[in-house]
Image (tube, rainbow over the protein chains, first blue to last red):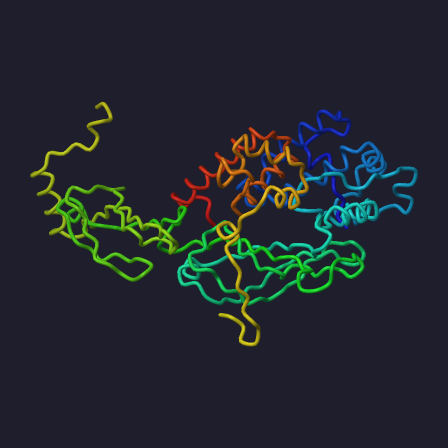
Length: 323
Length: 104
């Protein structure tokens, strides 16, 4: 088992005061909080920091942890001493952050027994007549939302086993994707959460199971970006199409359309196609954002054309730069 | 593609199709009524009709309340701070989506 240096995780000295530890925790928690951070490993780092804080904030756990010293030498395996924690009374997990209690093996081996009981009561549903609600997250293609319809999803559902440990169970479900569902929205499947455990003595029958909440996030789409209910498409046009106006074939979720580019358009011009965004009531819009694509001056004819343009149009694009 | 032998489950979009009462939110998050009142006063969550005798909330309030609770607990932020953080996070999310920055 890997030894965790909680002081190193928190970036504090071993003799840091409670105030210093709290300050370090707040700073790291802000940096890695999964609701705030876009760091790729934010969730893992946040858990690690939360676990370190859970130990170092509690005088009993910190004292017991300090007795382990600085851990084994690099490469050596860590085993908790058989008398670990004797003489200390752990009060169990308090309101630690993170997505439920999901501690490392190292933490579990030292403090796990103190946690199980506390965690169990914390995750119990407050409505005594129903089983727990479950939450899961799926990645969806934009096209699946545009079309709606049945899809199979593999969900990883957290469950608390008989010993109070958190385990992940795989569950495959056919789900009707509501047409036009947006990223960040949730599909609620009534009665697909946890069944009410008989020992908990709830009302038996159909209403006893909790609900399953499936949060939807979108995979990046090769053409469209989604903002609210609107879709954005980068539409490349030639300089003469932008300058003189043109009608160009443009993809939309409902199939290609002929889009009129007004004369005098420029790079970044947004052309709105009303109602061609996400299907909902009212539907979103599709914005074609113009990108001016320059033809390469790859042969003499093209070069001559560019020179002719330069001669015909004395144009200084840097006039606003003050030179 | 759906699995052939399994039934297909139909749900609703929770953010749009669900209306919740103050009592529902209290139960869902195990918080006191004054905590929710503070969220509403500070703009963390919105009520459907401000003048209604009984407050009703759209399902989308749940996501905001969940983030609010986590930020309060993990970062020690108060309700006005949460409201500010939520606004800034939404603006950031919108800009990221528009510019495609930060997508996997």
